Image 1: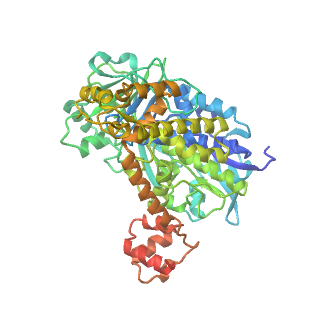
Image 2: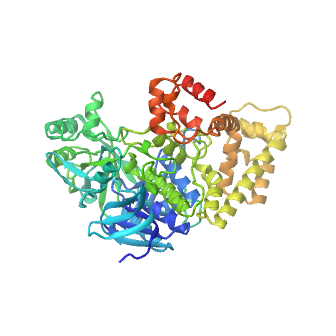
Image 3: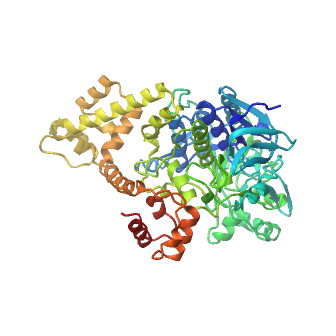
Length: 623
């Protein structure tokens, strides 16, 4: 049936698998995407949204490299919001509410129109491995498909177990069976595995809700979009979300079912996401809070199905129903489906290289929740990187990795490989020490040239980015070199209660004042004339404003990153034996032997390795 040897086989067609398959195929590799159900490609298993705090930056980075998540987020969006606008630009995070059905359809159509990509629907039950190298996969029907590399993106399907109160049954998500066989085989190869859990809220009938009792949450007045391409325009119409709250009455009704909760009676032993706890976990952990926010999110333009964000639960369905009916606006709620928790296998990511290739099996890559992460965006970015590196490996080219000062994707993968994770990993801006450099607005400046070199970003995309960068740099230089007279700028300063000037001064200095915006500066005739003459758009104006106002912070972070890069350039020999460094602490030797860092910089970030240990290592390396 499959006579050809594929360059890349991708197992699983969630967010990680879809990006992996698209990347490998677009780089010219003959690729096969195998999934248990072709109708569920890029399914939004949890909430119908993309982006958010730090996650929005990741989607922008995927798009800048030439991935598809940003494009699909735009084509299927029903609402757009830029979060954290009251804070500095390093914290701004785009987020879209998506039409769940359209999101999956748009992803599938994009993949079907991708050259070099084949599809097959069946469960992969095992890997073909010979002499420590992957050679393909076997399916549940006993079919062998050969490949030079394999990317596993199994999500929550590996031995998945769904819990609703006292009931539990095998499944990868509601209505779909679990995947079996792969975990056991990987353990035989010497991999360590663990169990994690995640949860999802009930889905309800929007016609049964009273929105007049809730707080409306509209989208931005002037919505932006994710992709740097012109594939879509910003939304002109948007659907609102709504907010309501739990209460002490709701909490008391939920507590009545705690003895039947698998989370509290010991049936679930695995660790769930710290930053997205279930409603019962919130009530238990934050006993002093008498209410919690619930966000009522539509699942699409036309469907009446609604997602109750904040009410993730594994309690019995009758307890869920009774408690939810006591929430304001939910008095007559009708369920489409109760919430549930799911336990699944994962493999601690310290067993991977920075390329996401496994250390134990040559040509085998892991991406997504199999690595202990949670979230569509985290999964998609790993899929993109795994697909890129699988393709590069087949082509005999150097691997592609991103540093911590280059991308949130670089922070994510370095955290996983260097520190590992014992609970579902979620990205936050606080995890990135160079977040002023890694803003959502400049992802194209940082990554599009890299995507172009890989063959993922088009020349048109690159030229568009270069034009935008050139215009923004020239506009900043205009502010640096152009002076303004007091009678021109003082009316602007006075209107903003900012101290006036008595003599001519450089515009850059005045624009850098925190309360002076680009709209204020455009009231100066020479600035407005420049904007109109050069035909500067909103993206360029925003970029210039950020570069002026945060010049000091950006320069400081660049200097810090340059210092770190010196240690990044100090390579450690492969399979280095740290046991012989007796001056190093026992814990450090154990951790370093386990993780086998590639550079001294990576070694310094491993938990349990002290600056003194790094000094010993540098001395040994002749530094």
